[in-house]
Length: 211
Image 1 (cartoon, rainbow, N blue to C red):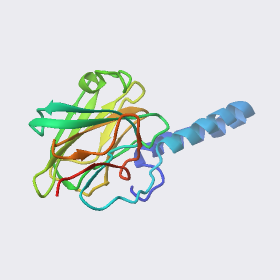
Image 2 (tube, rainbow, N blue to C red; image 1 turned 60 degrees about the vertical axis):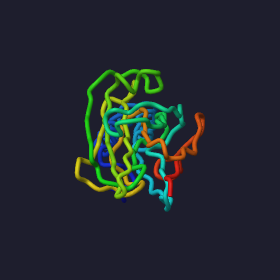
Image 3 (cartoon, rainbow, N blue to C red; image 1 turned 90 degrees about the horizontal axis):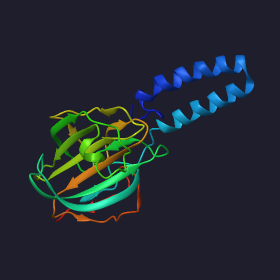
């Protein structure tokens, strides 16, 4: 999957649209061109780029997109205390793969069904469909990643389960067609991004771990 140019979840969409494209061209040239463009966009949406993952004591972005907010909160599910949450909005033009912000063991995973507000809505992360994935490093540091579905996105995919071990920047899932990703960091992590910045999953450094 990691070497494929398109994630496996996107292949059925592309194949079906490719078949429809052939039928559309048989019916009408302009209709065929329209469906061909749609097929190309879907293939583009499910693209699976390779990334050069930074080394060192860093936290990498779990997703491509724009940083919406950086806020200090209380996180009760996994960190059990104060945390800094970085919220990233993914447009339909961003790569929708999610990546591990740090290396560690998956110690917590919970799927919560919900509504489908636009992903940048203030309460979207509290009432939309979402999936929680908690990572614990060898040193015991905990980081929580949340996949949040949006208005267009209607399915969250998570390939990892409790007990799995992920490398920094390793792919663990995706959200289909528009969404938001959050990462909750311990208060001693130095966050290096600000609202409005554009980040790339597995490539952009969003925080530095204390030595």
